[in-house]
Length: 443
Image (tube, rainbow, N blue to C red; front, side, top):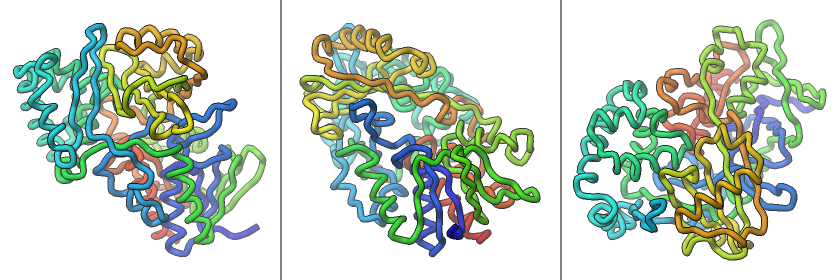
């Protein structure tokens, strides 16, 4: 068997980032992946004949670690991202919408129109009530982590944000992005997601990917890592780590294969990491990992006979369980006549419902938003990820573990580990790079 410097468990963005940075330094790496494709929570695949994604993904303009990694792997963002300069917020039962500009510099007119306009939906009083909330929130985020003691709703109430602004602005920016209601969503995570956009306001915008994530993002990274001399083994699900004299020395898979290396990096979702490392559950050295709660996500993806929306644009629907969605027939799924991906709120509940039960709710709530899908659905799939995200509820940020552990031979990677980012693609890439640095110190 070939000798490896490191074994990386998981070919999501954290694992791929770690593998690249180790391989770049001349280390030979083996990446083990349970699925037949790379990407993890940022993957695309065929589910019973229908092309689907693991979820609705958007690229944020101020990301830095992910674009740098892609560039090193030969990918130019302009070739894989369709930029949006605004987002729609639909108001149920009123046949109205609020349009938000998302690109302060690159879409200045639309941003200004969003701030000064929409007065039939959001009054001047409603808009002004948001100023102290955002000013104090960003200031507090910079200087302390005390914001983690408050939910978005609690912090908004402290600063007297109007009910309409909470519902039409803060709810979409919390549950619409991370499928957790503002009553639970940590104010620290809320402001932390947007804070990097302040010094990089000139880059601020969001974009849809021009193809499935596995194809346009992950496979180029895989191919680059292979070209640097490292290996991948797919359909190889890791069951547990191997321990010798108190040190982790490798892993054992469900196929009864054993792989050994001086360094092992667990770069899976938080739930899989806890399973693989269950032998250390009562070991204080991994206490934070096992104490950190997780949350679920659930999307339903619809193939239609025609586009559901006039443009491929990120859309929010506060007051419904259709927390955010987008038409994708002109961007990610260009082979489809119509394609709608919907992120569902109350994900834990929907993860346990059948696709048919969810579709009934979707049709009813979409009708209330003025989007009529009856008779237009050709195919549909529920994609759920149960307990695969670390929870962005209050008081959890201090539980995020460092990549370096006190156990010899063991390193962690994943957006749940401690970085300046949160449960995002950017956070995953940063965590992988930090994990690689820790491994290089030991090697």
